[in-house]
Image 1 (cartoon, helix red, strand yellow):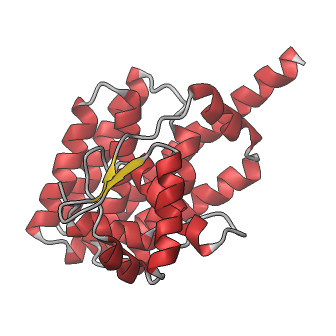
Image 2 (cartoon, helix red, strand yellow):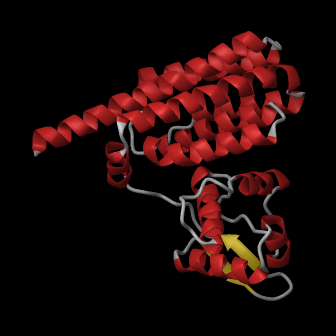
Amino acid sequence: MAISSRALDLLLLLRGSEPEGLGRADQVSYQIETAILMGILTEGDRLPTESVLAAELGISPITLRQSLAALRTKGLIETSRGRSGGSVIRRQIELTDTQLQHKLKDTSTEALRDLGDLGAAIASMSARLAASRAGPQNVEDLENLAKRHRDTLDERARRRMDSRFHVSVSIAAQSSRLTSAALQLEAELMTLWWGLPVHSGSQNSLVKQHMAIVDAIRDRDADAAARAAEHHSRSEMEYLIEQHLGLTMRTEEGA
């Protein structure tokens, strides 16, 4: 199935999320890998033709082919030639809990607090603007994501839904720069979050926080939306820092 125009837009907005020092081909590979990891691109999605995708990404077809070759080597896409050919997402990226927990443990508390401050600022302003700009479809999309997050039993899928919810609030704000900032932040946070368990009390709180944001946006209450979004973002980061400190302490005790 061809990817939607929204998925392509989000893929393009991921530019800038990649680590420093990568060449352009590796940057594009990183963008596509991140989109797969976040669930923006899913198994069976067909990428645009090489000429179209290269033009959208602002790169040469040769550079794109280098990126696609790297993704094929990792088994993330498969490519067929001919009139009905093209590149299709082959599988979802899954990292082990151990890999993810190592990354969280190795990220400093100060870096996490900085990410938390940025996340709270993006979430608050996005929700404030969404309360005045969101259309009925935006509100419906947020409600659906909140419900899917509530009903999903798989923890990794639930984390993806939460990330998509954050990004969708920025989309509802009708600001491409805020959406790009939210995407890049979630791309950085996703491999810190996904190795952590979600206990039932925390999950219930997240569900209520999502619905408080949706309700405030639907009611056009900008102040309430901003407060709810900032509270949600900061409570998530407090939990992340708590888990980071716990991992660090256990490592020191085992040394």
